[in-house]
Length: 506
Image 1 (tube, rainbow, N blue to C red):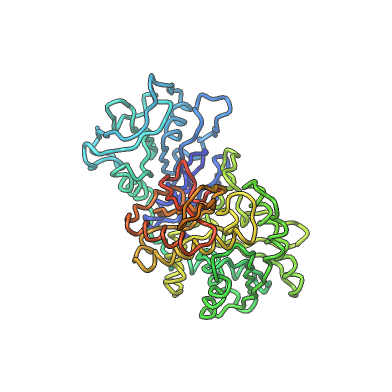
Image 2 (image 1 turned 60 degrees about the vertical axis):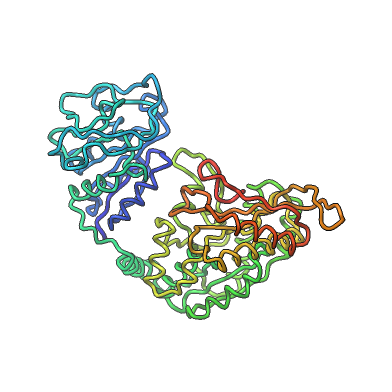
């Protein structure tokens, strides 16, 4: 087992970014709920306390006794984590006159500090907190300040314990990676967690966990399920059966092309045409969450049917990755959106769940796929949502609307490839809006549908910015969609970022 850093999650939306930055430093880490520390795990070498949407002064704030952690492991508290240690030690944390948010400059006061020492004296950091540290016990030593925040960073004397009120995990903190790297050095991390080591450990664990059991895998055609398939195939070989379901909401001709893509992988794949089943279940449904749940249940129904045809299936494997889990249910209990591939497995299927990628981010999955020798074209495919066009067709779904969305999407994606732009964006697609507008084609007045083009740049799907595609390219795609896709007379381009908008529209 790899040595690891434990990140205690107090509910911050950037907790997963801490994990990403640590992983980028070739160090394995696990994010666990704030009250689920793995005491007794000898592979734990350090602890990071995340931020939180709560104030430490809130009666319902997430709080734990750190007595058995502080002094026994190196600890780094970030934002709320730093404030929690001050509050628990008898210091004062209170609300300032104004919220401390955004970029500011950090002045390092102790050049001998193992974490902040030797950093540039005036580097940019990102603040995002409603409370601030006002006073601390005597054994808290001030190590850095900003113009507005005296206790921007501290160290507890006699312990390998640090606190920072800024966010080193955020891109805007210039020396954030360096700070996290120095903390890992204090923890004595070997920084030997690589795609190759992940494959070695995961294949070994899968062999031990699954033994001679047979597994059915839900293939989607995307990188996540594909990498999952190759890992499982390497571990259990012929005991893996893959099922690829055509729910009628795939990209144009995707069912056939994906089956062809899997030939080189040596996988046992069963293709299932279930379009009519899904169309029937989705008829008249307009609520986004209801559509997701219907599609999710539909997948489970299909898998249950296929599993019954096979003998001795004991596991259902899925390409679930970490952002799926984060967005499905945060530690605060707030659901952003449900994912069809997260849990939801009915007990009646009597199958156990296997999710070997569930702690990985998308870019990590791609690196592992390349390490496995998979074709770059399959690895670098844009993410495509499990519910497919079902969440790119706003409102009720019909076969005619699917046709429009597929044809518009095909023109957009093909255009990106031809223009050499496909690999420069993270994800792109066409959204069919429940909006009809007046248009003129020739001498005729039209009243037809609107297509929204969506293209974003990202590294992990947790945040995303809209792609600055060339105007001439967008004009070409717009004209082509309007001229070639019957039923469309208007094309718009989505220039919203995540947050506040999501990548998909539903």
